[in-house]
Image (cartoon, rainbow, N blue to C red; front, top):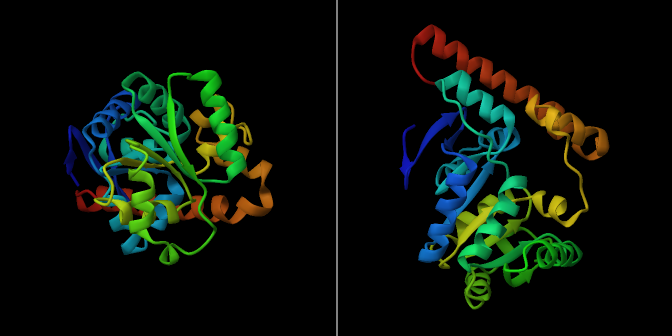
Length: 259
């Protein structure tokens, strides 16, 4: 897959197409789109999302994204193994503060969509302390209901009325990605699916040490913190990811073609 979105070619990793480019380059691209009032969305892709992509309808959502960043180290390493590409990790946890800082420099309004009112308030407090020039123009924590019950026209009007250029979304995967795809072309803003980055930025969660992130062991760190909630997602999903990756490598070696 070689789709190109404003200078960011994509390469296929199992079920999804990943945008190439550094963190700085992708932050700049998102900011330019926001300044232009472009309706777009950005997915931060990790191993879990790649396995969710076994559902063709969800794969279409991710592959329809204007940017699909290499969020997890398994994605980064897969790009190297499958395509010989050295790609910087562009994680949601790094995108969020970088985009807030860029939004402050470019005077782009930011809307927080998702999470809880408490999480949003903590984010707003940190932004006020750390990035005083950033403008949070609106916040909304929608009720925990199926996506089908939401009124996309009303949601778009709510956000558009604030003049936001960036919409930071935390609804959990795959709901937030489906929400962003549903909202594209309904509002002149760039949506970024950040999920748990809200909790980390708010100070309600912690991140694995850098050495664990570099060794693709961030999942193990998270698992030790919340084993009851995350064991299936990480142990089962990561095993499936490895199985599909090995299968893709075998196809590449034996048939001489990209999986």
